[in-house]
Image 1: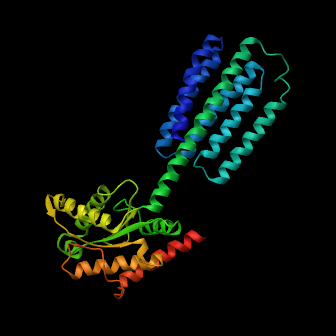
Image 2: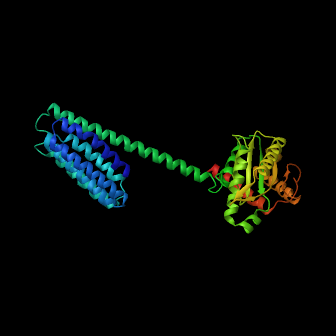
Image 3: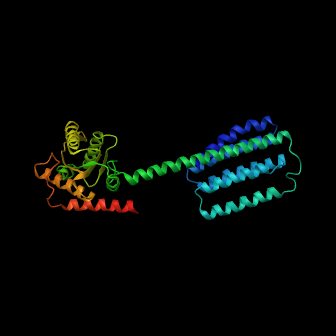
Length: 348
């Protein structure tokens, strides 16, 4: 609404010289009063006097319209402007009941102006025609600007909604559901891919020794290192507290191992810093390929078993083979359930 007030103020300030040039002196004076009223309405609106601001703005606007209709003897421009006033009213933050009352008042005013006997009784002079054209162009400019602004705001909100629905708020990578849905899409399309399950070693010690704020900083840093090490077609998602899943389409096990080792090297060269203090952290990783199981859940479980094998072997390493018959951990069950939920949501 503040933008509408400002746009209306600028537009009527531009109209003012035309009114004086056409010889409408009193109408020009009223137009300047209207500009001052808009400035006051803008100030009131910014101070959260929403209803009063709209009342001041519409009152000055309607006074100018009615006087203009009386001077020119034409009601057409008035009706157009009242339609814009209705749009402005609907976009305001007023209560629904107040909007309905104002709408009824504007409708009665529009009908009354149309039916007044002294309007539209005489043919318009060229000067009056020009004024009516200026008013009509102004109304279309205002409507076009408001609609374009609404579309921009809607697109921006939709983008934010989609981003928030698919991304982890802390690390800004894909969230658990989004990365599982991506994996299920690859699986359904029978696209070959490799996945790397990544877990930060001894992460609980960072939270215990330095606090959760430091832990959050480490997770954000890890997400950046993982993302920077991947190709444009690869994806990374956070699937647990300190656990990430990387999806690498058209990638073999040896190629995935190369990516994992590159990540370990980059993290060693770029340790996280928080509050001027280094927060060194290492990663354990388990790798599985799409052709190593008959179901997507089994691939996730295999990557998790290899991840835990890397931790059991001393951490800070990559395991990409074996452990096909090992028992699943409780974490594997949790991950498998997430994949199942993603598959069901896609079916719906």
